[in-house]
Length: 210
Image (cartoon, rainbow, N blue to C red; front, side, top):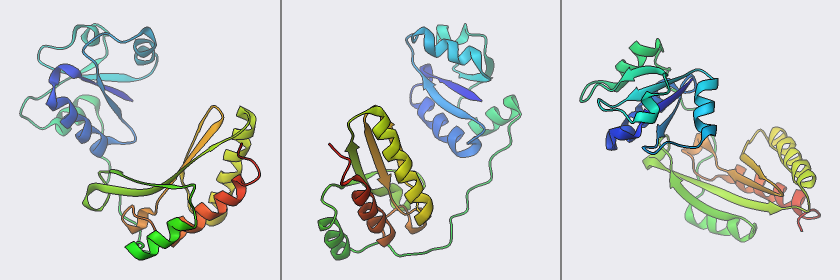
């Protein structure tokens, strides 16, 4: 179910977004609705599938007028309970982390590993489930000659991921395939598994990238 969180709630909308994602994912897909009426594609999507709206005391007109199942924001009260009661949802069980496997790479090992995979970049981003709220990942974008070639490459990377039992985020955007990889069991840091995977991806891309 989609949950449109009224942008009129201001900072409370962002707080409600975090609560809804934590407590009800994947059954509930929340997003903050803009104050200005969006294009027809957004409103059509909200009408076409199960959706609800978490509304401010003075709701954004276009959102209130959609006639979605309404959840009143409880002000200073418990947003999780308000959503659960109104929509009949059960709070999701917290995810238990997998048992620790490989340790994160230390600075020296990481620097040496990166020297061997120069096509990859290192990115650090906010991630609620990570140690200290940060995720460290290797990222590479591979550009191919056509959409079909990019799709073939993405399938080859997916097969590699299954073979190594190490699965990246894999995104195809027209003729470009972007791969993002980290080790969740190591606190969303980088390990030897990530270096091995990146090296194998480089071999797949060697004869294909334009």
